[in-house]
Structures are given as structure tokens and as C-alpha cells.
Image 1: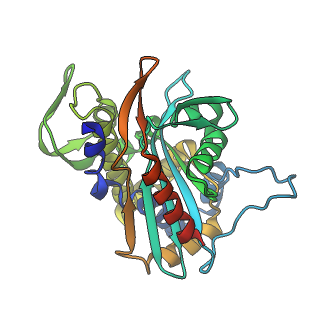
Image 2: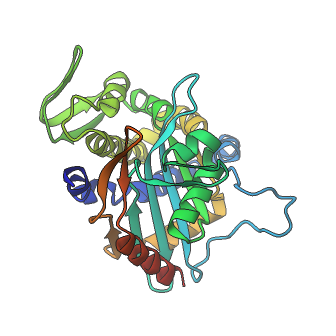
Length: 310
């Protein structure tokens, strides 16, 4: 129960992840829409990766409107060379434009569930390792019994390259940490790309384990996108930033969707509700540690998300 209790403390740092990603990208694109259209379009061509085949006439890519509710799966993946990676961060966001409300649920990465398309029961974050974004989306849809309309994928390893491009980032470190020759004192610290990469991967040196690592990864994403979306950074380093974003971010939002999202989100300040698993517990099965959600709580969360999506 201790690990589960710690998970409930991470609300503040994860609240604006999707907003920073969408807002940061949109700011970069709009400022340079007149002078660097080709570069922007090239980046969008890389980023925009539909989940469904266009030849499948039974399905259509959803379009963001100011009326229809929709859902988003946020995947933060530690993907290294010669390694398919695992989704360390899995956050589901439901948006109801008419009600001007959002709900956000962070799914513990060790949650035990059926992996759809793999014929296995495993940790939910293994779905990405087994079958990429499509299998992760299918598994989350099955786990929560709701449709996932959109996804945002961020490769944490490569994405941190942008830190050197923008001259480093400053964050508020909540505990003193040491890993080999790297030392991160408690308080305000400034990180270059190399230090940020180690900082985001520390696990065993932090008594909170994966929970602590996820907090640091979200802090870095927020700091990067906040600084990268400033006009001064964009004017100096736009081309380099777009290259890094294009190599390490994937989503099935189109440019038109992003513009519509900005219009929707500006009316939703403060209308975001955090959902979390508070009653589950940890359990070892075949010597592997899993998070087991309490069935009554899981059903309550499912019902709440379904009602929000109407």
C-alpha cells in the first residue's frame, strides 16, 4: 500500500503535460508559419502518425471539434538504442468541450492486465514493448472499457536532446540524489542534456522507485516545452528544435486538430479533475511485482470516464 499511497501525491507535476506538449508545438508552428512553412510541414509529416489504416473503410480518423468529447492516451517511453522500450508514463485524458471539463487518469505502469493482441496477462506498460503504440492503445481501451481517440508519444531519451539546443532547463528538485559521479542537490537545479538524461533515469537511488522517476520525467518535459515555446528560444533555435521534435514525438493529431485544441483548452483553465487508483495493492505473482487495482474502484473510474465521454 505504501507505493500506492505515494502515487496519489503526484498530481501537480502531471497536470499540464499534454497542455505543454500541444501548446509548445503549436506556438513553435504558428510563429514560423510564414517564414519556415516547409520545415514545419516536414516536421508535422513525421509527427502525425495515424493509428488506423486509411484503407479500412469501417473506421475513420476522428476530428477534434468544439462539440464532441474525445480521449487521449499520453505515452512517455524510455526508448534506447537496440531496445523497443517500455511506456514508463501512461496517462489517459478525456475532454468534454461542451462542458469545458477534462479528466486525467494516471495508470500505474505495473498494473496487471490482459495485453490485447499478445494473448498474455502482464504489466500494462509491456504492451508498448510487445506491439508499439497500437497495442498500448488497444490494451488501455480494454482495461478502461472506453475508446481511445488520440495518442501522444514522447521518446524521453531522444527528446532530451532538445535541452542542449535551448541552453539547458531549470527545475525544482525535491530530494538530494546521487548516481555514480552525478549529484543533484535538493532545490533549484539547472540541467544540460547529459545531466537531464541521468536525472530522468535514476530509479534505485530514489526510495520512491519508479514513482520518483516518473515525477522527474514529467518535470523535465514541462521545463523543456515551457522554455522551448518562448519566442526568444524559437527565434534562435527553431529549426534545431523542430528536428528533435520530429524525431521523438508522434501523435495522430493533425495541424488542424492542434489549432482546434488551442481554442478548446483556453476555456478550460481550472476545469481539470484528477482521477487516481487509491485502493489497489501490490502483489507478487511468479516472483514478479504487480499493481492490482481494486475491482470496485476500477469499475467506478470506468463509469466516470464513460459518462464524461457520453
